[in-house]
Every structure is written in structure tokens, then in C-alpha cells.
Image (cartoon, rainbow, N blue to C red; front, top):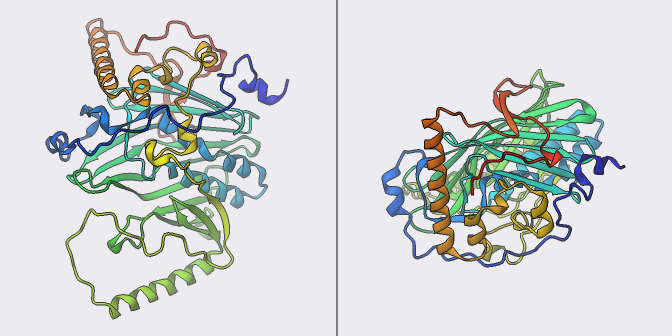
Length: 437
């Protein structure tokens, strides 16, 4: 038996679909007739996980499925494993970390909040991985995931608590929690946390998204670090979507510079070349500023138009990652990528093997995907009420919720609080599962 089959690629354990769909059953509804302000004006400065939003502002995926989009560019993990040089591996890991948030560009629909005990699995023989995730906590909402290479070459896992805050014109999502990538052939582990994501123009105007904050990737074997700065767009949009930073060794010596846009691409270049380019670029910007009298206007939430849509490539740079174009029907399909388009597909063969907690079987998401918005709304309400009643019953009987596939514990590499995979999901032995739908 090949290693791939041994790890779950075999037909007996496979979850069915070989040829993937390229479209959703129904295009998205227009949100123009709905005022989000009427709901959000009561919530300024509050955390949004406790607010019930109308289904029209959702996209037909659970947050567990949205998390799985980290895996779209798994080839970068395989590529990292293939290098013998640790700096080249770190470059690929950094490219993977940037690519993992790229699918959020223009994705202004909110994923459905997972129900406690909800699960999601994805097996992609073509991309060489399988993944299992579970909603392990409801307040605060925490989603845990564990992916592994079908050739036993990597493990990628994490637990995410998306802390949402409303600031008047924008909603900010801070994804708390550690992400860990283990390259098994090199006995190496990398950890990082994702940047903050912000959706602007919540009240009026065109919604647009930016990511900002520092992402520090640590190689726990060598002590090398990659510090990436996701830049806020700044005045006149000059910095919109930009990412830049350095790989440095444990004595903080710069080994390599990285730059690009999280919506587009990432390059690597010699740090001295990068610093000289930055210095020159800063000088040119200041000259432009002085020659053109800038009118000071109050800070706007309108989407800025960047100076040039593409990245200026510094001579001597190497391309690490470039985004695949979205499918032509993406704008009618919640701005999904081709990868996102297949996350909720299901067929009879798959239904026979997945557990009843898998979010492909969630009736509200399925109704929304099929364009049945009223039914989606009714089902969402029913499921939320069912979850509340179950919680009440547990508190009456003083019974604690037990997670099925993950256990709480310290991250083995940085000691942070984490949720770690307990194993045995792929044995397909699903007894005593909660009835959540």
C-alpha cells in the first residue's frame, strides 16, 4: 500500500468527490436593500460574537470551512520540505503564511458561526493533504484544525478565536491563536499568528478589506525568525495590501528581505539591495509630496486607489508565490476562489462516510447555497435555539461539554494555550456524536 493510501487517500476511507464543481448552485443575493446599520449601531465597541446577524450578510460556508482555505497553497509546504537550506525553507513557509490570508480579499460575506461540536473534513488527494476541524468552544468561539500531508511529510495545526469588534465604520477581526507547521523530514516546527483583518464601509459605500499587523514566524529548531509587516493602507492608499519584512538568524542578522502584496505575490531579495531600494523610494515620495501641495482632508473610510496595482519588482528578486486568478463567475459567487467553491460540495458517497456533525450537512448553509434565503434564515434561527436549549440542559445537569477530536493543552513549541488533535478521526468510527442539526 502506498504511503498516500495508508494515510487516508485510499478509496475505502476517501470522502468521495473526484471531480470538483466550478460553481455554486445559485448566485448570491443582493445586499443593497438591507441596512446593517440598524443592527450594528447598538454594538459600537462591543465584541460581535454575541450578536445575531441576518443571514443576508453571510456567505454559504461555516467558519470551519473558511479556515480550511489556509490550505489552498499547500504546494508551498511541499516545496519547503524539498529544500535542504533552512533559509529557503523559511522563505516558502513565509509565502505560505501570506498566501493563507489571500482568499480574504473582497470576501465581505461573514461565514456562519460554527455550532459547538460541529466538524469539517477535507481530503484532497490532488493537493496531498487531509484536514479535520472541530468547534471546540462556543464562548469564546474557538475553532481547532489539524491537517497532515498524505505522504507523512508535514503537520499543520492551530486553534483560532476570531475576536470581532465594531468601530463605527468598520469591523475588525483579530484572529487570536497560534498556528503551527511541522516539516517532519527536517524535524522542524514553525509557529506564527495571523494579521488583523478589517472590513471598511460597513454602513455605506463599497465594502473593502485590509489586513495589518506584524506576523512573526519562528523556526524553533534554528532560532531563525521571519518578521513580516502587513501594512495598513495609509493616506492616499500608497501602502494598500503591502507586506514586507526580513528573515533573520537568532543573532538578528538579516539573511533575506521579503516584499509583495498579500492579494497578489511575494518576492525575496538580498537585504542590502532591499534597504537601498527603500531608501531611494522614500526620497522620491518626499520629493513628490513637496512638489504637490497636499490638501488635508479628514480621514476617510473610502477604499483608496493604490499608486499602482502591481508590485514594483526590485532587480535580483526571486518570486516565491503568486496568486491564482479567481474564476470568471467569482463576483456572483460571494467572491469565492476556485478552492472555496468546492468546500461545501457533497455527494451520496461522501454522505456515507462523513460524521453527522460535518457542516456540509448543516441545513441553513445548504439552503443559502441553494438560493433559498428565507429557509436559510429559519434554519439558522432554529439551530441557534437548539444550541441554546442544549446548553441550558447541560448546565441544569451540571454536565460539561466534551470535545471529540481535540484536547486543550500547551502548544508543544511556544507553550501558548492551544487545542491539539487527539487522533482517531480517520478511523471512521463515529459513535455517540451529538445531534446538533
